[in-house]
Length: 249
Image (cartoon, rainbow, N blue to C red; front, top):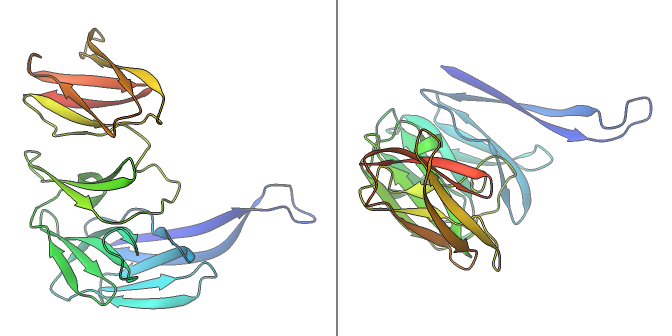
């Protein structure tokens, strides 16, 4: 059993303390099985929320910003929860219920579940871990969900109807994301530029030699990069200091 303890810290100034000292506000305990969730903090239009999970009872408890318990969610007992991600009230639909993604076991399927415990969607794909294999990206004003199978051969891309309020953690916009990966002919790369911005997309081999370059602008939500003429292997692509890798097969 993996035990996760996380604490909210705030920066304030108090008489008798150094300015900027972090003061412990509250401590939560959360228990996961094979893998853990992403940060157990999320935003809604009503403000900051926290959640914990007990893998013995399959129960999620949701707290408001004052650390008051406001919801108890019972996940169906047949699901062996290995990870929880994308807790949100507006991303998947607009019924004002919380929805979230659950990985069931190691290498098992992924579900979309709401706060009533209802399974809204069975994605039917096995993952190594929900943290790395489920990615949310923003394209203009729209969001897309990308789920990679555990063999790394399938990338399923879903359009989402709603919006997501980000917590400032390394997630959606911290690095470039490209799919499919591996690829045989082209790769779709999330565009980190704002409208009106221009930059150079560069591709390097593993020896550091630049082999491709492309002028890009922030007017396109995704960048299509043709790599069909590259030899099979691993490459690095960079835009304005952000970088990632892809495999040409």
